[in-house]
Length: 265
Image 1: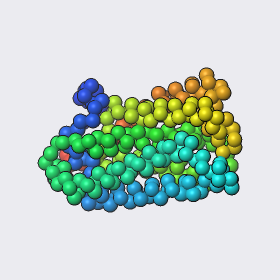
Image 2 (image 1 turned 135 degrees about the vertical axis):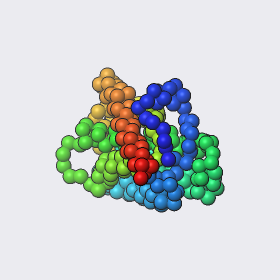
Image 3 (image 1 turned 90 degrees about the vertical axis):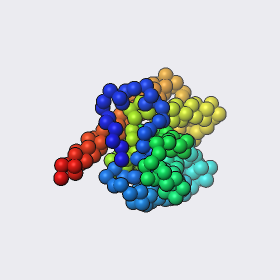
Image 4 (image 1 turned 60 degrees about the vertical axis):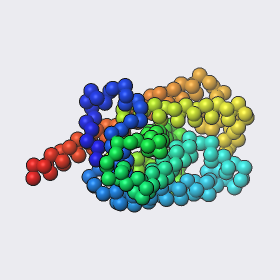
């Protein structure tokens, strides 16, 4: 398990911008469990859960787009779907890594190597981006987009349960969080912002045939829209990552206390 100490001078070393880590086994176990099998079950469950729901978000797109298939297919333009998609990819890649390591990388499973493989590094980047994006889209939806009215099951799943999952997963897993890795989420946000500009320039419309995806992303008013983008990408996204880092720091403090009590007994 991760025995590093967050909130120390070591955390702020430049090397922590990178994806090196001393114990890759922490990516395949629970925080307070030394065996990998329970974590494998956890990962497979959430991978299947998110895979099913990303499909259902398309199936139930008629709930907000109406009966016109040409409008229903526009589910892919929304930040909600981008964030839920990257969260789904994160859970699938995470599950694939855990399965592969359990059966093919016994050295990582048994914590006898410190090799951070390329697939664990890729998993870590997606994990960081997906976590920040999930919290941002939840806060942005309820704070900027939702104006009242009925709420569907898909709304709850993609703007509520997603954030709950992220927080719980950070609490129970041993996956480390690096404070400098906030830029993974920022890159994701920049990519989506660029997409909205390209979509607008190409004449794309939302499901109501408006010349924007969200009212707050109306590039007919570039100054205000750019301000929203900057606020979300360069302020909200890092803040959400720092919140996740805070949860991680509390998790580590609890773990150290638990370990110290165990030694005392």
